[in-house]
Length: 150
Image (cartoon, rainbow, N blue to C red; front, side):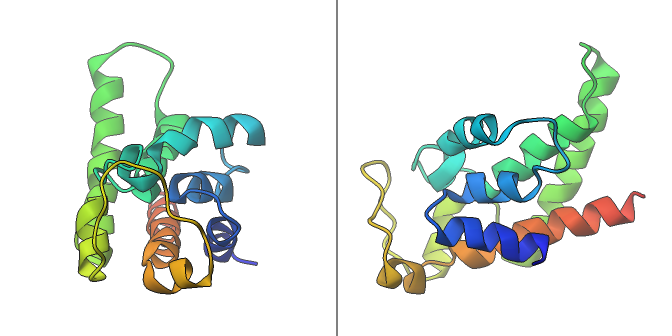
């Protein structure tokens, strides 16, 4: 199974988009599964279902921090980390059109609810939502980026 398929599988099992992407890269990062699931959950639904930055993209940012940021307070550390995030944002936007959850859902002609309780996951939910595709594309963007900087 590819990393992209693994992320989609996690999403289809009921994990948030943010959890699915971070879990797909668990071999790259030094976090146990319990921590991954806890730390990434609040980013689902465009950060707590506020429909802001896409949770799948937020996990890309978490992975960048875990892989590349130094454990130091310095302007250079911030600059280098932010540059990676900005590059990945550009790549994600080229594929998906935006990094904004609300806009991604509206592009799929969904009525976007902000806040509130997440919808029940069933076949109808998965049919109408673009999130599995977005999770797939997020992993692809990060994999292509990592390959390009080798």
